[in-house]
Image (cartoon, rainbow, N blue to C red; front, side, top):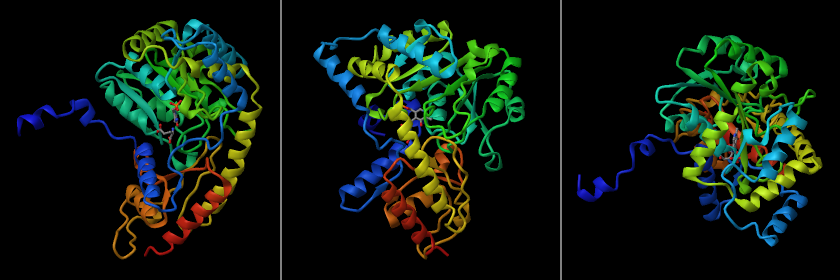
Length: 404
Ligand code: PMP
Ligand code: GLU
């Protein structure tokens, strides 16, 4: 190996890290589109709506009012207060502003929480299918991901009995999202109470509750926060943000609400790594959390309509097995019927092959289920215009009909 190659070697932790498959597919879709192909990009989970006007106005005002300096590491006091009020209003969660730390997106909040709680070798139980970044965040903290599979037959959800069986003396965190990405599954209050009863019995175990899709919930009961169960409240780190519910993905605001020692740990970490997050975006987020929720409700209605549309169309494709998502904006069909089939040139072995083949043959970008811990499935974002969704599913249907 030459000296130059030796020096150009990345650190082992980065070599070991997988690239985010959601972002990798989105990049490939952009590249194909730049080459002139008519790509329908359904790989990134991102609202196609604009941020509501009153939120944008608050950001403009923040610029005019001179919020140009470093913000406090844990977030502006008015934003932390707004989040505490929101948690009380929506989630039956009583936390003080000092329990809240604002970060650069919910992704950052999750990564921070894992960094401050996980020692090398600690186990993090992840309910699968899971969002692609969970296992990689655990890897960065030198923890060990233990995957607990939610069965298709149980709407991809993990039962309390499965959780009980997976806990060991090394378990530090149990993490999952409800509503879930990629399945759209929503854990009911009853299911969460059963899970909480298991957690209660295991003292050193914490719950990392990812609630970023809270407002995109189609169940009549609506969202329930596991942190609102008093017996385990101090052991639940609730993560949320503005990206999905307010169509604010690019503003990059997320938060944790947790016991003070955990919040303090996150603040300490953040103080050395990123400092306080974007000042203008924080003012926008304050407007989001204190303002009306009409726009969020309208967006959720649109996602529900699109879910019905896309799931209905996908179920017409021979061999596709499709669950009915109760929230978020994804469809997650099991496409394993096509594994082993070929177009005469390429043999489709797995979900990665399937997703790549669909992209290259019908110019619809999806994400393989493998990165989500569900190798039989692909993820299709339904956060796109109805016409694009109809055309995308039609293209997929036409393409797979050629496979033998
Ligand atoms: N959790 C889940 C389940 C997600 O799908 C995403 C994707 N955005 C995030 C967290 C991160 O959200 P943010 O954009 O606020 O970082
Ligand atoms: N959460 C979105 C997704 O799953 C955004 C992309 C990402 O950060 O992974 O597609």
